[in-house]
Length: 313
Image: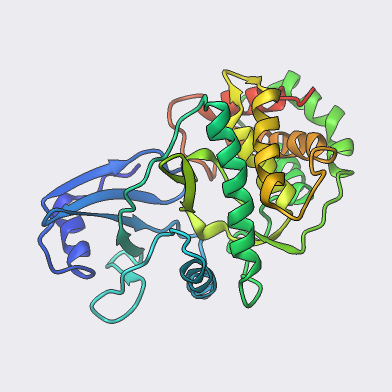
């Protein structure tokens, strides 16, 4: 994360809130936006500098849709604060856009989860999808190619044709061997989904899921990909997939959802999600232009290898 001068950050916060900021800490977990936790007069807030690739008009349009649905269904979500000009985004002198919202005091769990928590996680995903089903209009995809494997494969081939970085022949052979079968996975993309259902984006309170964060990816898509991505995030430990843990999430989802028998389709969708993310990480590792933040040298390639070998059975 690029270092931000503390005084500059405090001044940005003043555009949104009156109390003086006393505490600032960076959040290095975010792979897209630069995120900071700030404290002012006993209250905590999140302030973010948006990735420049994000369309703020689409973000605001989507916020209007999902905030209404979340409010009506008692679902917690980041509630943006308007700046001194009455806008949700403040633009600084470098033409970067910032937003701010109160910190949501809930539990964000870490794996491995107990059977009870996994079951509750599945129920929470089903509730979230029910909330999204009540949205009045279709959201605009801020990342229109998200989960579009054909697009990522085209980008992969383009980067390979230009790169001067060291490549991994073994990983590229796996990609070549699997790409056709992964492209053959067909999905119903008529639902509204979160599209980034990793465990750190799911809010728990007293053992139940009560909300979600990082809603910028909300878009039309397949609920199976949302479930599969959550399973990927929650049920893979040190490169090993825990199928029994995944089954608890599925049971929880089906216990309150009208969508039944999802397990028969999930294995291939799960492997597609893992393959797609692996392809993106590997492409990033050999590209001059980075999308993901390299948490440490070699992180992207390490993630690619692990994900490429994550299988359902």
